[in-house]
Image (cartoon, rainbow, N blue to C red):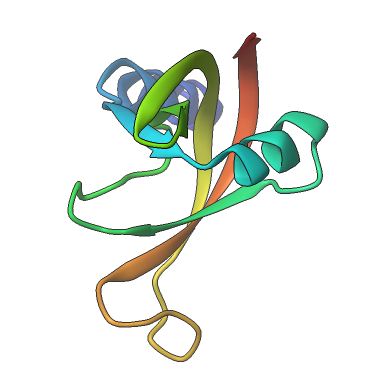
Length: 100
């Protein structure tokens, strides 16, 4: 198997095993992600996030879901204690779908 075929197969395996995380998001942050000006999420890492995982960002207003949801892929994870509070990560995300 050629190197580029192996890399493609490894990437396919990662995408196939990705986890889906359903997360609440405040309206102001939802709108920023929706507009494309906030390509990241800061989250407590109690879910063991990985690159290629899928986030379902569900807008929550006053404790109630609005029905609006953004689906995004995790493209990068920053967990350096120099920049992140203990237990937190910054997730680089790429929006895949917006359901308003």
